[in-house]
Image (cartoon, rainbow over the protein chains, first blue to last red):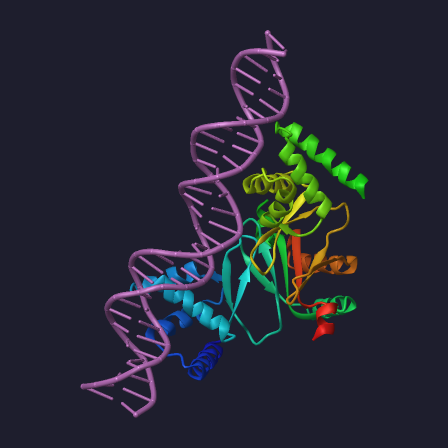
Amino acid sequence: MKKKINEKKERLKSFMKQKGFKSTKQRDIIANEFLKTGEHLTAEELYKRVSEGHKNIGFTTVYRTLKLLAESGLATERIFADHLTRYEPVSAEEHHDHLICLNCGAITEFENPKLERMQVKIASDFGFSIVDHKMEFYGYCRDCNKDA
Amino acid sequence: MKKKINEKKERLKSFMKQKGFKSTKQRDIIANEFLKTGEHLTAEELYKRVSEGHKNIGFTTVYRTLKLLAESGLATERIFADHLTRYEPVSAEEHHDHLICLNCGAITEFENPKLERMQVKIASDFGFSIVDHKMEFYGYCRDCNKDA
DNA sequence: AAGGAAATTGAAATTCAATTTCATTTAAGC
DNA sequence: GCTTAAATGAAATTGAATTTCAATTTCCTT
């Protein structure tokens, strides 16, 4: 797990070098916290986490670092039904989709190759070539079903 | 087709009565244009259409009428990758999904019962009960593929 | 049909996340 | 160490979405 994060940090470093971007303390701290956390965070949420330990890091820098991570391919921007922009570390794994609990807000990821294949087929039947897709289920998770 | 629209207008009327809302010229005109158009329109777009023939109708009223239509179950709010809120008349048909062209912006609808069933099954494997779901394909449509 | 309470309208103001600006600070090649 | 181009962060700006409020309209009651 730690290995993977270091791998990603290396990838970020080389991307930045190639683009002529500088490596800074702030970016290191922010990227580290983001990759470590591995959740669907808004810039605001990541800012809160980061600034707990580092009161001198500004929101703008967190925001821009997330954009940078997205540009370098280490993060993906996602917008769910609450309209907020969230960021998620990109894994080497397959494309995945999301289950979103309307009660507790938990976001669960899943992947299903069979579903993926079906999607590609449907699209091609329309003469449509897929670049990306998005699929979200909204409902109630196991825990919240239990409580009800 | 015209029948369906009238049916919907009836539905709207009874919803409004029940809720104690008043029927006005503006609402009639806006709802009519919206139901007639049947596309994925933003409030801004619908406002432009409506105000061509009725220069005295304000944007706010269009906006509020769309919200009202959504409340009454005659429209659905949708947000695609451009982050704008669009409204779409609700049809009696099955749930449907969207193909969105990254070049020309065309939004094509499709439905696939087999896919739906698969989705329900996947969700239930996670102990998840689905209330709603959203699926969007981003890519290039037949026409734009041709041009390239 | 007139009166009046309550809802509607629409221009303007406000909100709020997202993004940009700009003066100051910092990183990294020479 | 010096230089300069990029990075930082507080504050300002943007733009869609939403709310406010005075004037208007609907519709219920008489």
